[in-house]
Length: 137
Image (cartoon, rainbow, N blue to C red):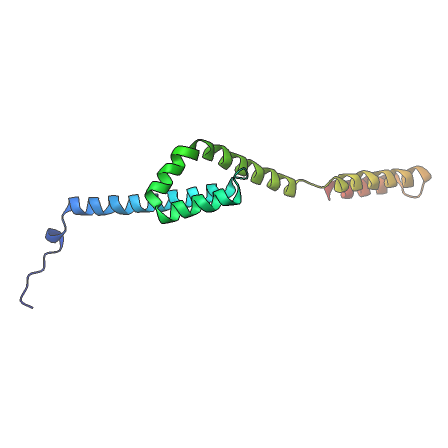
């Protein structure tokens, strides 16, 4: 080994900064590209030909295509994203909402227990114990 080993000297701090900046801008560009493509396919008001045209334009000429898309249709991107988030939240709320039959089942059980108590089939303590079981389940 006849050569000297200069690690930090060959790659100065400013060079590292510029490299990190270019990597950050490249990742930002990729994210922006995917956001535009997702927005193209999310828009229900656009025809299939329009979606195909914008997709080809963005893929073939990515820099020009994305800038033109942001200028022409960028105003409504936030509105479409907000509507999609609202629809996802409504779907999630509807999925986790308790069914009305569960509360009706509890009311029916309590009514049956009350009828049994009024006819004298069960005692007051049995009624209270069964009522607690129905209300806790």
